[in-house]
Image (cartoon, rainbow, N blue to C red):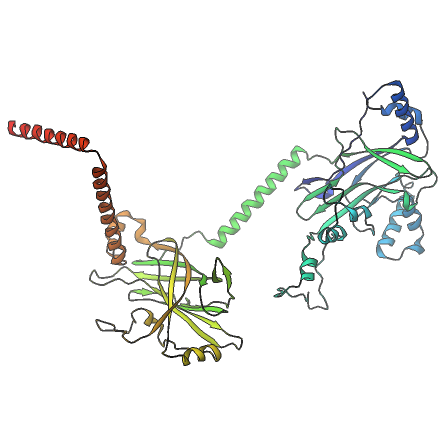
Length: 568
C-alpha cells in the first residue's frame, strides 16, 4: 500500500495539568529522494496510464542508502538543548563565549566530549533562552484570501515576542506606568490592544544541508514549534503525526531534495501506584485546606442576643437619573427610630465617589455602584400600643463644578425593606427653590443653592411633636431620581421555634408597618371585584336562550331543594 503525505500542518492545542518537564517528542528525520527523481517517476506513471499515489518505498530504493546522516531519530524533552554543527563549533572555543549562557553551553559541550561527543547530527533545538526568532511567524496570514491586506493589529501580534515577563523594579520604586489613562489617544489604544500572555517557546530544528557541509544558517529549517503558556496550554505546530503519514519538507540547494519526518508523543505515562499516590496527596491537601477555612470561619454560628431581631442590609446606590448638572455624588445617612439600635462600630452615614453622567436611552445617567452595609437590632419587647417604625435612609444628591463648588441637586428618602430578600427601589428627589432668577444665576455662576438644615425634613422630622406638620409656602422643584438595590437578611432566635414564631413574633413582624397589611388586604379586595366584573361581563355576552336555560335550571334546583326540606 502506498504511503501518503500528511498535508495538515496547522496548529494543535492541548491542555495539561501535569508538569511540562515530562513532555517528550520523538523526531524521525529521513531523506526520501531528489525531487527530480520524483517528477520523473510521476511522468513515467502518467505515460503508462497509471494514476494514484506513489509508493515511498520505490523512491527509497531509487535513492539508495546514503551515509552521512540520511536517517536520524532523536527523543527530545522539554527545553532540552541539542547543539547544531554551527553551535557546537562556536561554543567549543571558550574565547567566543561572552555571556553567562554562552559559558554554560561551553561547559555542556565539554561534558559532551568527555562522554563521546554529541549523538545528534542534523536534528537540534532552540530553547526559550536562545536568541532565535522564526521569521515565518512574522508573515502569517490571518485569512485564506489571496487579496488579504495586513492590518495594524495583525502586524503587532505577529511581531510580538511573548516570553516570560519578570516583574522587575525600576530603581527600587516600581513600575511607573499610570494605572488609569483618562484620555487615551488612538496611538495608545493601538499599542495596547494586543494579547501578551507569558509564553515559553521551543523550536525543533533540522540542518538539511549536504553531507559534509553542515552548519550553514540557510540550511536550517523548523520541524516543530512548541509553545506553553502559564495556564498549561500546549501548542504544537505541526501536530504529532500519530497514525497519519509523515510530513514533507522540500529543500532547494544545489540540487532539490525531499525529506520526510514524523513527530511522536513518547512521554512516559503515570504509573498506577504514582497516580493513586497523587490522588491521595490531592485529597489530603484539599481536606487540610477545608479544615483551614473552617477554622477561619469557626464552628459556632453567631446568634443574635435574646429578645432581639438582627437585620443586615447590604445595599448599593446604583445610579442617578435626569439631573441638571454633571459630576454628581450622594451623601446619605441612616436614622434609627425608637426600639432600634446598632453596634458601636457601625457607621450610619457615607459619601459616594463623584461620577460623570452619560446618555443612555435618551436620558442622562450617572452610575455609582457604591456599596454600603448596615447592621441593626430591633428589640422584641415592643408594646402592642406602640406604632413600630422602620429605619429610613435619607440622602441628598450634590454636584461639583470646575472650581470644586457644590450645588444641591435633590433630597430624598427611602424606607428600608421590611421583608428579607432582594429589593430594587427608585426614589424621586426634589430641591428647594427661591422666587426670581437671581438664585438661579447665583447657582449657575458661583454655586450654592437653598439647603435644608435638617435632612429629616424630607419626611416628618424626629423632633416634631405636633399633630400636623404644615409646609405651606415652602417652594420646591422636582429633580431626578436615584436607584437603590437592597439585600436584606433577618435573624432571630425566635425563628428557630415555629410556635414562638407564631406567638412572640406575631406582635412584632405583623406590625412592621400597617401600610403593608392594608395594601395586601386592598389588593385581595380589588382582585375579588375584578373577578365579579369579569363574571358580569361574561353573563352579558352570553345569548339570551342560554341565559333563560340557566335561570330555568337554577329555578328547578331551588324547587327540588325546597321540597326536600319540607319533606324532612
